[in-house]
Image (cartoon, rainbow, N blue to C red; front, side, top):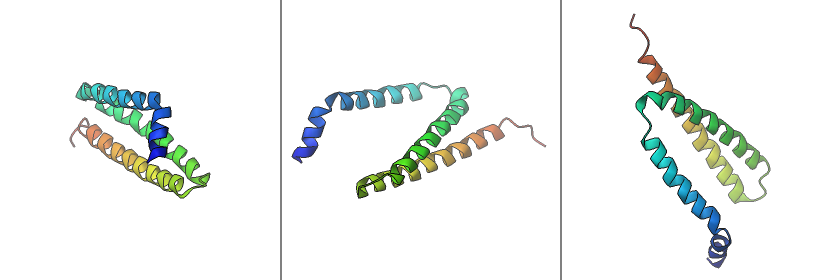
Amino acid sequence: MESILGFIATHKEMFYLLILMIFVGVELIGHVPSVLHTPLMSGANAIHGVVIIGSIIVMGQATHLLALILGFLAVILGTLNVVGGFVVTDRMLEMFKKKK
């Protein structure tokens, strides 16, 4: 427990920045009009593609079991997000096609 508290104490600024980024991200996404949803989903898919590649690299160089587990979890969650984003984008684009 002391090692965790020591890590937090030495990296206070990073935790403050993380909390600030979470609040700013929630506010930004909450105020996005629905017209911009599809382009934002495409951008999120691209970002999560980079997350998947990075987590595969982490898993390949993992020396500890925790790093391997976190890398595997990142691959799974990133893949779910990318696939879900493509499904939502495809469904939204279907709404704009002409009926046969």
